[in-house]
Length: 340
Figure 1 (cartoon, one colour):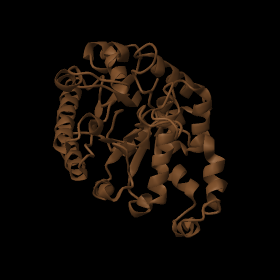
Figure 2 (figure 1 turned 90 degrees about the vertical axis):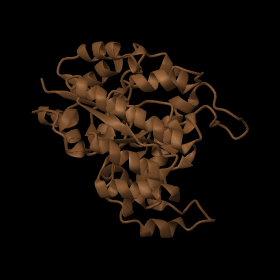
Figure 3 (figure 1 turned 135 degrees about the vertical axis):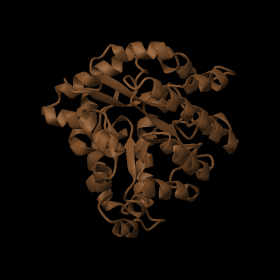
């Protein structure tokens, strides 16, 4: 059995949970965080990890984004420091369970994101996590250019997590999303939309050394290969008020090639076999990393790990190919050796 390094699991460090998350009221996704003990109780979390042989976890902060918790950029930076310091301390004490962590980059003030990313990497972070939007602002907004420039220069890996709340309506005639559509369907669309904006804004052209790991197999991207491929090869045919034909011709390659070649992705699809197969068929093997999204399953910890491992073993990969997914691709992306 080879070591399985779970590249995308979520935890809230003790100090941040005690001083920020456990006080006041939290709605929607914040309510969800507080209902899962393994997200903030280290002893509960370690028991979950211990259920699986030759298995360890990379930790990252979950939800809600700091930018939705406060409108004060200085406060978002302070939140990030508390979380990142907590992860550095926790992983140093528990390297067998948690051999690495992902820093939180506070994007309310882009210079703060750059500054905190640099500080965290010096402390040993594997990379940084950002969300698919910053309090509703798209990632290709010019104000975030310094962040992309810095991440390209340092080649710091970026974990890209979807973010959308119930305040984003499903229909223009309404004021909120119903039936948790904002999460179940919205987050998958949100990821694909963020990837698209990075492509068509030419951020991926300007900064070719970016290493972006998209969560949940890139959302709806693999299933829409036909639309992203030959469909977007005709971009501009449906639009009369902007010259998208000229935009397409100015790109360095076909739109679909960016999605396949310039993004990494993970296997966290909640046990969905069809989604796993679609992702396996869409992305090159060297772009896929093992991740479970622990501990947000109905069992509050082990289910998504178990089901994701089962699906990876069910795919027609060779042992060597599975090792790429389980840890070798992550080692190459982060520059850290997990399996001696």
